[in-house]
Length: 158
Image (cartoon, rainbow, N blue to C red):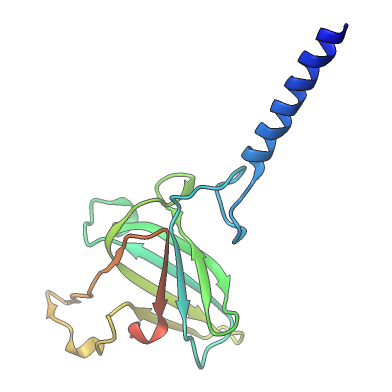
């Protein structure tokens, strides 16, 4: 009987620890459903002045063979708080957070409380009219996503 209690106790402790590990998310409240992931990508845009409301972010390549016209990830509707917004990037091709890295075009949409919308591309601070233009399209610079969390100033979007 004592052995049964010990074995049952060990199983209970292992189960409790395992469930605790599985159910934890990261400190920012993100993470995969049912558990966090240290490789998911987060983009924080800071210094947003003159705008309130919500924002969305698209991450895409210039390769039209990728899903949805080159879109690889998306930051869904988030509220602008204290002049910044945080996006936990979602992989648009699968059901889960995006873990990719490399150079990508970033597209930001801000919706004001009155439903007016404003659109911005990451341009590394350059005016759009100064960017190379060919075949009816601007050649937007790419932002190199390499860290789990990237913080980008709103002043780099035009």
